[in-house]
Image (cartoon, rainbow, N blue to C red):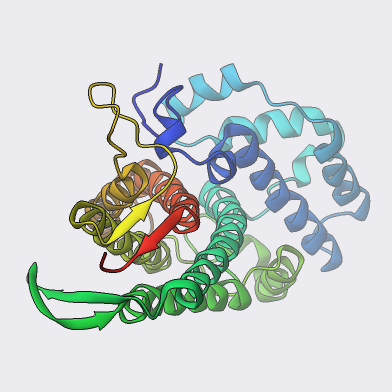
Length: 349
């Protein structure tokens, strides 16, 4: 049993997304953090900060290391973050090379960078799904765009329009948001690397070269540490909210059109009490997910307030909010693609 609808054994069939959700599993998180450590060792060895054989041993951790999850669960209750005990476990597995692992880094470097690596996969999936949604809208326009439709303003009949006019209002924002996703992916999400207080003091004059190498290995953008400057998280969450908002508008319109007979949506929507009904379930859920993310974005804006060089409170709040927003966005893009492809008719009868 779970308190989250996104991984609930039943409700996740409606509101969850297995592909996006997998990026927020413990296995994915641990793997991404180890990728950071492996890349860091490679970069530091290239700059002469640690021995090459140590970097090679750290690389091999990816093949054989198995984390003690019970120990991690106990330790995070004490430390507030997973990295101290995880580093202990990694070092124990490395033996004599263990002292060279995590050199110059801090917990937040591994955790935030691991998150960025996983979010890159999330955004890539969303990009592909938005392309499917745009293609479905174009297909509807080609098939049904010339059909007449009554334009409505403030829920009242206004002037005649065509189905194409309404489809255009749906498509425009999605095209813009897909471009924003692609721009973010092309620029590269942000590497986090600052050490204990953001100064990389242990690396001396090698700090900038190591950070550059690390960003290149991980295919992330090289930028100064952002331990307490969290606009990058709010920006990604904001994009999630915009995407679900645009898809929620499509869902809301289709639910209303199904009510007034200007849309016929196939597939599902059965009622236990009224067998003749076909409820616009997917359209309704798009509205729900849009409203959910709209609420969550305020929490990410609360998490912008980090005291001094690092905040435990604000950072932990992000862990509670951003994964759910990502999965909600995944569910919305999945449902919107299915919904648009199930439309049988649009326009006045």
